[in-house]
Length: 338
Ligand code: NAP
Ligand code: F7E
Image 1 (cartoon, protein in one colour):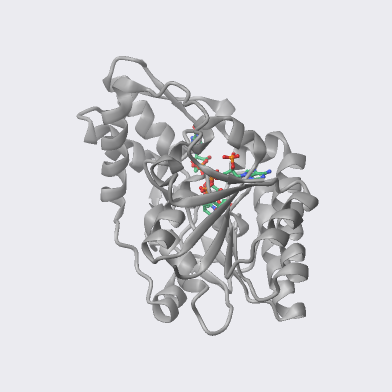
Image 2: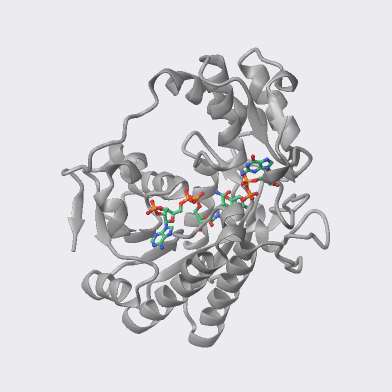
């Protein structure tokens, strides 16, 4: 067995792809999962195919003792901190929960690692939302932050905490500044998956419209399977540093709709309705990343392009539209510690 890694947020989109990637590299993979998710089998759905190969530890980002307990029991070579309240719209609805999980949770984890496992390498899941009201296009590691949501503020704070632990304690800590990345495993609340599920439901006769907000917002969308490779590469470098991870191409939500509906032989203009309630109090209008540093230092390149990403998501949802999953029963077969 190779190195041992801890992934917080292992039940999420990126956590499941990263677990697969690390297992393929012969890592021993452990995940930190909140107790409520362990009791609700549907939250483990993205990991079901890996259940015999990973070990889960019960802990919450909101509880320092629970994190301390996990890190006091098992030592890790690398820690990928992906757990967060990640939905931007929700962060406006309840900014306090977002701040507690994303800021305090990151601080708890960094401090517990410093005390108990100072040699463990640390990855922080930073976000292009930190750029917010962008000061330049494209955005790189030197572009100043101007977050536009409580989520963006929380991620910028986590970024600076990570940087401070690196500088003050000589801790191997890196932040990825990842632009939007999607997949068939994307949560249904995010716009890409909302669109591809909507297409499939309309095609299956289960819906007669799709309500969306701002169709003119532009994003640099990549595939999650590509982006988790960059996370791993960051922790294999001789010195810790922060990296933008992006495709460098930008599309509107409208273009995503056009392509996704066309993939199913539909015209989005006949099905999409604008709902003003889905606009955000402060919007991030455009995001486009410059991943030159990741390309030259990490040797990282995305394998998927925009068309392939949209096609894979639509096809996956079309296949599953007939059989929307019944809630899964909690699995007895995961190895759960604590
Ligand atoms: P995701 O699918 O929403 O997954 C979030 C994960 O965090 C889930 O495993 C969730 O667990 C966990 N979590 C949330 N609150 C928690 C808490 N209080 N205690 C413990 N675990 C908690 O997100 P993702 O798309 O995989 O993104 C991974 C990370 O990258 C996040 O930090 C996100 O903010 C960041 N990011 C994402 C993108 C993107 O485009 N996907 C871009 C930049 C940065 P449950 O299953 O229990 O809910
Ligand atoms: O919105 C617009 C919306 O929720 C994208 C997270 O992973 O990426 C993600 O954050 C755009 C926004 O992602 C709807 O206003 C229009 O401009 O898919 P989203 P996000 O906010 O960009 C970053 C990098 C992260 O770090 C986050 O964790 O689409 N939009 N109509 C809509 N968005 C949603 N969700 N729903 C709509 O109906």
